[in-house]
Amino acid sequence: MYQPQRHAASRQLVIRNHPYHLLQWGGSQTRPPLVLCHGWMDVGASFQFVVDQFSDAFTESRTIIAPDWRGFGQSRNSSAPDHFPFVDYLGDLDALIDEISPHMPVDLLGHSMGGNVAMLYAAARPARVRRLINLEGFGLPASQPAQAPQRTARWLDEIRDLRHGKIGTRPYADAAEVSARLQKNNPHLSADKALWLAHHWATEGADGQWRIAGDDAHKVVSAQLFRADEMLASYAAITCPTLMVKAEPDTMAAFWQGRFTQTEFLQRLALVPDVRVASLTEAGHMLHHDQPHALATLIEDFLGN
Image (cartoon, rainbow, N blue to C red; front, side, top):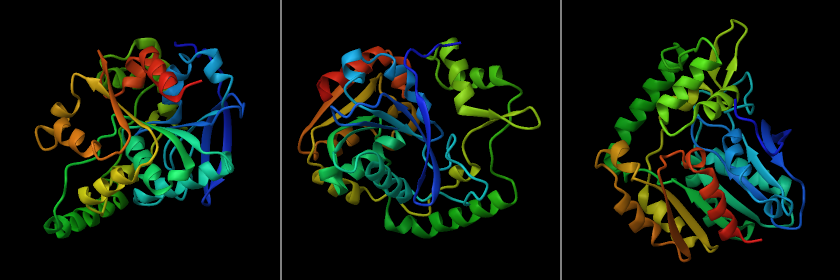
């Protein structure tokens, strides 16, 4: 199994009346804290491989924080809701930053869903973000108002299906089976890293079976349409230097099948006043797993020492 090179302390906070778990590496306040926001159906521990590749000078000068979003990892409780509105992630991030860095702006990094949260947060709270890094957080295809009734009906159907146990994740026999699932999802992921991640990405229940550490309600579709015009306005309002890191080959082509392209996203991204784009080759969507050393170098160069 993979052996982490940098020890993470586990912390428990209450954020907006919700239990929140986060990992913390280091504790220096010489440089702004670095906050790492994971993606959908992931956990904060997912960033361990990148943190292990940072230089000593980088890690010794700052605190690095990786929370588990509400309903994921160890940020879960027995009274889980039947859906998770996207705006709650923004509210949670705002409260978390107030808690860990009340007097200093942070450097903010987000992957996938976390990248989308980070972009919107930087637009809404420009004074709280010094530098912004988005890893493969592309957003969604533009929706149309006419889709609203159908979307609302689907949301109602899915929260009903959740109540009746028709929405959920399958159990796994053991950590090795979880590890195999992770490698199936990401062929770039080595066996030792997959096995280590399995112990954070899933938990063993009283029945001996392993289940993904994410509430089933995360699989319920959002009741709200994705409004691309609002996203564009937010991109234009981002004032901090921004780095977009994408994988090569293009991960959007296979996922969206032409419904939303990387070219369309880059046109949106061009509205960010101070943005640069970097690509990592031989990597998929989970590029922080696939190319942790190359990514750590990009992050250090962008944030500076």
